[in-house]
Amino acid sequence: MTARPASQPTALRHVLHACLGSLIAALGLFVSRGTLLPTLGAFVALALVLEALRFARPDLNGWLLGRFAPLVKTHERQAVSGATYLVLSALLVFAVFDARTAALAVAYTAWGDPLASVVGGRAGHWRWKGKSIEGAFVFLVGATVAGLLLALLGANIALSARLLGAAVAAGIEVLPIRLDDNISVPIGSAAAMTLVVALESAA
Picture 1: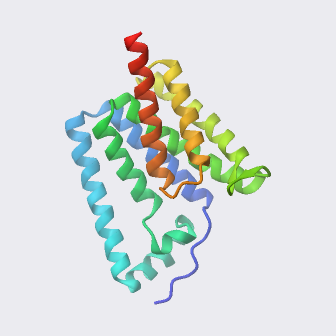
Picture 2 (picture 1 turned 90 degrees about the vertical axis):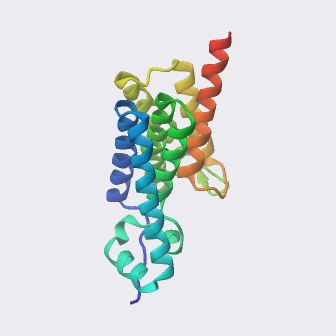
């Protein structure tokens, strides 16, 4: 079966990306670590099996692309999907970092990335290495708002850490690195916030 061309990101993809990341972030604040990590691990394992199957079976890959084309970026036809990377990065940050920090890092990606994609793709005039500067700014705004909302839900780490985490997330998003944003942004942001909290605690 021949796959229909995969489309560029649609509104539905952006909404689902934001909802998935927001759900994971919220669960991370209200569900115990002993429950959250095995659950995320199971979803990661399932996603990786599905990815492996569609790479091994062109007919299955074509069938999936034909039915979920609005949710698939062009390069994901033969590459791991952003959703798989997002769940994998969530597992990693919740396994390594404090739950509040991990929740913020995931939420920054969930909110910032779709906003950056929409604004950068439609209104981005200033570009650096192919990335939109306007998109990075909107990423920062979206991540900052996400941080404020999550603070109300319990992710109340220091304001300076939250703001720096949002800035680092936006900065990583605009960097021309090969690692998928859904992996690099949460890990880099969580590491930056952890460093700030540690430095402020030691002061």
